[in-house]
Image (cartoon, rainbow, N blue to C red; front, side, top):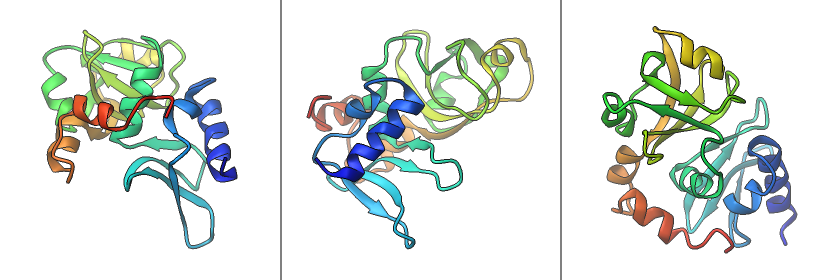
Length: 176
């Protein structure tokens, strides 16, 4: 196995929990490096799974990474659930405001990479939590999650031309 994939899996296990690295990064994933030689992106078949931030060595998820992690992690891990009023907007990549949050993983901290889901645990988006779990549930104003990628926007603007459910099946099985 490639030592860079091994390193990426270790970071993912630290950030998202034990086993997340294997769920996110298959053996055939490729690494894109920065000009300084550091790991920058992990891709599969040319599609970004995740990007490793240089400032804090934490991953931000691409659409495939979010789908793979959503399939791997049990509910409610790493999830922020929004109400049905805001779900269509979040799906398009709009901000998830705190007033629309109905539940969240109690371990979420401000700055964590999170999965935004609807009340039926359908994945809507991925982004960065702006508040802790308790704040997400108690605040009536302000940003709850700074959405990076809404899955509707991601699938409609991609060259894959696929729906989110097609993307998870095309990314092969989690054990691949």
